[in-house]
Image (cartoon, rainbow, N blue to C red; front, top):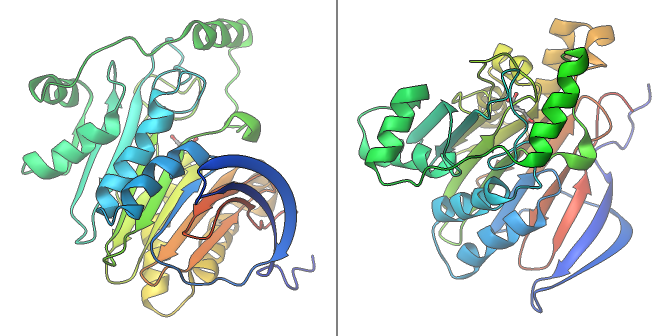
Length: 326
Ligand code: ASP
């Protein structure tokens, strides 16, 4: 497979002129050089509204941690997003269980896993980071903590998600497959005007997973990792694969040793594929997104479906990621 020039050719979809705040969608191609910019926010998949919420904070010279939290709130609250928060597809028992993690520029971190009944697990994760001596709370304990912190409880299963689950029950066949058209699990990384780099990741996990299953998103080093002196990385796709290679930490570590974010993402994906074997890996959708502390972006995925949203002062664009399998 000839992958010559694969770092440079990307497809861009321009989403907005940030100066006017009007979203206009027009397609164009470009040869992108990984230009370093600050402030900047990048998120997995097509998440323009999440980036816009984060950008509001960044533009006002706010803190990257607030930016990623605000950004993550958007898909968490949207009932049409079927892979995160409210409206997320449930597990095999018909229960929506959420995972999330957040990290700041000093590598402080907080995470929650297997949380039910709360729309904004990212904010519970932030509260774990800021208000407890711990990093991770799961299940009932996380819910008790959320209640004590005053987070509002609610039902997260929408009629549409329930219908999809009932439909799934007819065959009860689990395939860790992503429908890119509907995919919104968000990993979001931001570098603010003061050079602070933070990240967040939030998901309802794989649709129709086993009850109790936890993916990569709340596992520090798998679905998210931030080192404010080096860079940040986040992941989306079949979480079991990212956990196996501690994917996000691996990428930041590679960047520490001199790889660009792009090179680091590619190396992580190749490592994952070499462990799985090409045949099996072909069926698995896994993608990484990375941002260096200088504002350079990298992305790479197993298959040809991953895209990410990038916002800078100049523009907001959705960029099709390069991939191992074309
Ligand atoms: N990585 C998430 C998980 O395995 C799912 C996703 O990205 O959609 O739970």
